[in-house]
Figure 1 (tube, rainbow, N blue to C red):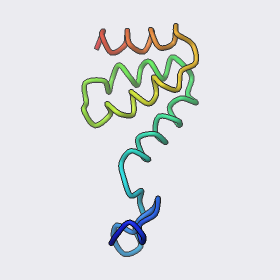
Figure 2 (cartoon, rainbow, N blue to C red):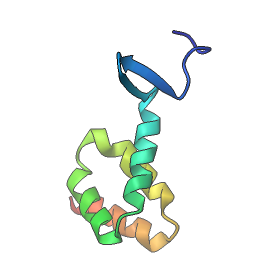
Figure 3 (cartoon, helix red, strand yellow):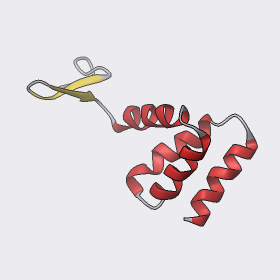
Figure 4 (cartoon, helix red, strand yellow):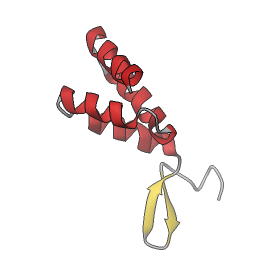
Length: 81
């Protein structure tokens, strides 16, 4: 494999396709969570903020928020957890 043969998606095993890098999965996960009701987002962040596997998803989720009050609420959920 090299840069000319790998695109956004890569075959991980026969019949199994995934993203070439985790950053794409993390961003898309944040986009998905961003569409949830805000209370559900806060619950999710509170439950997952201590797990390093979700750190980049939560960071992306914060960057998708358009209101400073929502960012403050997410940060509050992290601090509370």
